[in-house]
Length: 135
Image (tube, rainbow, N blue to C red; front, side):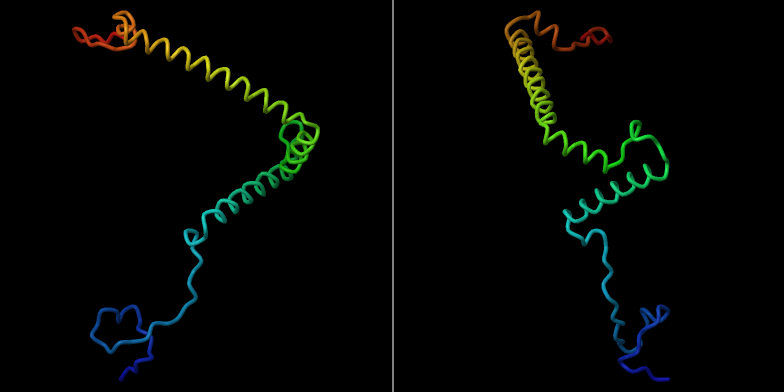
């Protein structure tokens, strides 16, 4: 039996010396990696929100113990409108900046001591003497 050029090659015929065949045309598969990164991330967030919502509905847990995404979003919007969240965020930023300033000051003092004094160098640099590590 002679094959025409429009026959589809079976998997067992691959690599044989038969006449070239036309590949069957299939629609390209939509692979996860071919979707733009932003769309993938949005899809993941939506799936996680949906799973969270389903868990809250199915478990029957009290909203005081484990609130659902709808309740959380409502409380967030109400907090922004009331100004509570903005005030709390500003307070958090003040504490963060104060901590960073204090950490920078301590690091500057310790670095200065390590550079200018032998005591500071001994405190900050570990040495190995007779097999024991001293910090």
